Amino acid sequence: MADLAGMNLAHYRNSADYEQSLFLTGQPTPWIAGRLEARERPTAIGSGTIWHLPEGCTVGMLEFTGAGLEALRQAMLDKEARMVQLGARLLEAPKRAAETAEAVRLRGEAEASSLSILAETVGRGLTQALRHLAWWQGLEPESVTVRLNRDFVEARLTAPDILALVESWQKGAISRRTLYDNLRDGEVLPPGRSYAEEQRLIETEQPEIPA
Image 1 (spheres, rainbow, N blue to C red):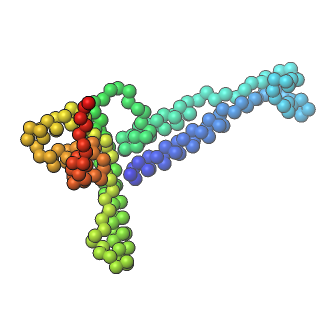
Image 2: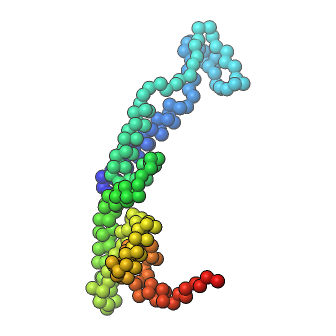
Image 3: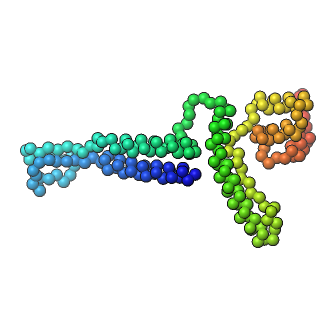
């Protein structure tokens, strides 16, 4: 995370330089070359203003033609690409090519590894703080544990996977509890619903008899 923060700060500096350069070089600036008396110097500019200049004077508009801005812009793009490599996928352009669900899952799990470490560290810190609070309130500190959700990648079972699991259960290859565990891990069942609650719901449901 420190490398990502440092790269983000460097990107901000390039962005500030780029915006300032655009402001300074993008303003229309007229110039006059020649000998002018003080009373002959123009004091206004615009389509309704006529400049009466002595013979021999030349005029023009300053225009930026250097490559400095492009170098700043390319430096910003390079840093954005580097931040993508460090884990900042918010700056990455969306991929238009089709990807398989397995490829997306594996790529997402690899990207979530740093987040998992961070979530584990934060969970330990919260656990320690709440255990101190429990001790002050006369409670059992060891009974307090904080575990942050580290399910950063959607891993829902597909319809063929669900059919295969149900068929295996019906044929006696797996137990009902194993079927429940797979459906829970596959994010088919609502979060927090226990096996006993699911069994109770199944038993209380009345099968619909077609008329």
